[in-house]
Image (cartoon, rainbow, N blue to C red):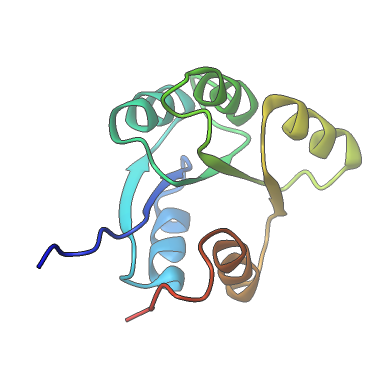
Length: 130
């Protein structure tokens, strides 16, 4: 019997503690990948082809908006769901994110329940948190 694959989630943020918080919040029903800056995030996304990316906006080397554009521009990752994470909750940032190809936007600080809701909207409630 073939083992079902777990959804792949890529966490791109220059704060390791925040990446750990997202992993702990979402549980073990997912296969997690991490990157500490935008350039690394693009490289990891193109290599592992995640189902969902949580992308910080303000990062070294390459900001989240440009990283999102590059991931969405590649045919292999064009369908990847992209949720932008940022402290900038202004409408203009949301507009730039949407233009870059983002599928959602979460303002920091955010509640763990908000993260869970976003993931359930994308994958449905069928993924079990363990």
